[in-house]
Length: 252
Length: 122
Image 1 (cartoon, one colour):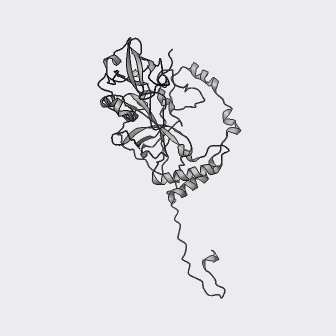
Image 2: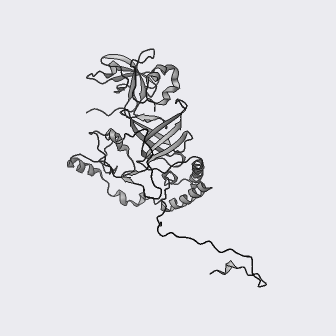
Image 3: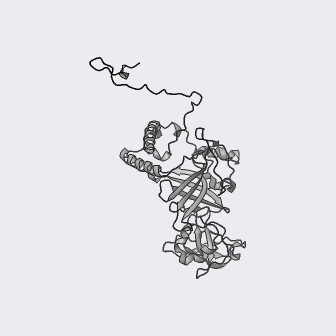
């Protein structure tokens, strides 16, 4: 009960009418929080560069996002990207593929899409903020067990084939992102990288190697790395600040 | 054991012929290999002409895709693809099923016949 609601003027007469505050309805049934997603390229890398540089880049990124919608997607989701191409017939080219890697920070953020067309594996690395990109459609939103699906190059081609004309699968906004726990079967060795080694920490492959090879691969494990305090980079506070900044920028 | 497929195309890389010519598709006990790249540097990228040794004969070919990552927004293929060509630029095959990058259209004058027989573009 605040006394600021009525202004008592110096001579005791009632002050200007203040309307009562609006009632806040808290719906206890729908208490689920909206899913917060901050694109990983907003988080600045750990280093000694001036935060002003990242602030200026973020301003430009928010400006681009206001004009062009970049949907929320993870590694493992299927996207369709249309780019402007001066050498294409209709000046635009469309490519559908699964996102296998998201790299880069700031305006140079990239993502690699992979698909197998006519038995030929094709990968294209797109820049998220490139003005040549005309549309990014999210066909299927899902996560996989790993952050980096480069092992799909050595997996059987059926795991990388996606229909070019597939219809977008509807996903709900407030639910959690579905995790596809698919274990992929690989082509026979040799692979481009030794994916069984613990340094890659891959959970999405069904290793059909003999036990001896798996044990031998564990020789290269570095169990002290997860306890190394100098490698820690706690991004929770930075994320909070950047989340607020990005939200305010997008709402304007 | 054999070395993994080379990334860009230079001398002695094994390539994959993607058109439907008889020379490229008949099996032979040795894979087609590059023996010369017509380039200032010896490294062949998309759109460069190379000399191929197939079935004991020398044939010119055009590179249509390689394993090496190129500039962003350009496709990167899982195998080094090549289309057999004559000296004047006429392709030997009649159809190319595998996807071809749009970048080749830049030199429409030289490769018009190859682009005409291509089916898919990436």
